[in-house]
Length: 330
Image (tube, rainbow, N blue to C red; front, side):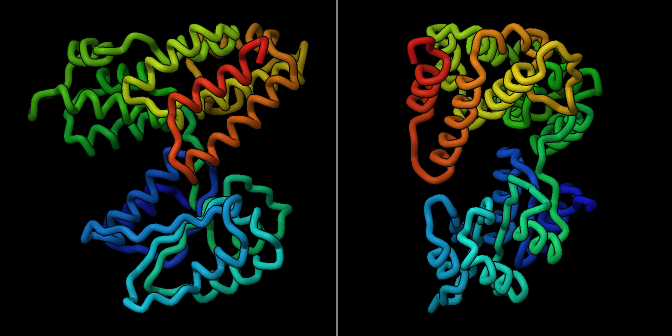
């Protein structure tokens, strides 16, 4: 199955073409948020958005179907966002397929398949109808494309060496990269070309700690340092959501080391962790039991759901996670 390129879809959306149904494959939260915001901007040019989140973990299948087929007396258009439809009770899945076969042309339904198991019937049925669009985390060799995109969006001129330096500083995730370039745009005078000197100055302002220091503290089970560095990052305009993906990768890689002892491990594609953290993964994995690592991944999944469906405190979620998972008394 060939995945459609996100770039082509974004170009269509920017050109004012919004289809009634989109199927996305992948769990990169930045890219999911990115495409939904693009659709909102194009679908609601007047600025008043009618976005409805359809969350199978929080809503019954009947509620989801009722929302999709609900009649609006004022005929206003709606943007529906449905994540992980495989969690909808099987009794209501046929209704989802029926809607996909004959969607309301005035609305837009966005479906995210994060768990892409081709053996599952709902995945087979949806991919029969739509060619999925790729929203997986990009490999490292594709991150340069996003550097160019973010610079273009901010109307910042910079040569290839400067862009490479920004990528080196913040290329561990799309969230981090966008945040760093956003900050540069704030401090760079209008019309001035970005230089290496600017990058050196801007990349360190008001930043007490780096993300790798936080991840290193988590890997070493240093609770106090993890809280201190994590809170510092949140105060510097990070969010728990932007920290969650490297955290999840850290625990996934530790688990891989835990279940593959004594074998030669190669990094499989893009991992949103710095080289310094990657080198320490064998040591970090020794600090945790397999059960503790699996519990950490389970808790991150629950936090992810809460962030998507409720209003939560980033700092509170961070501290609770650290005490529950990395504290040896947790």
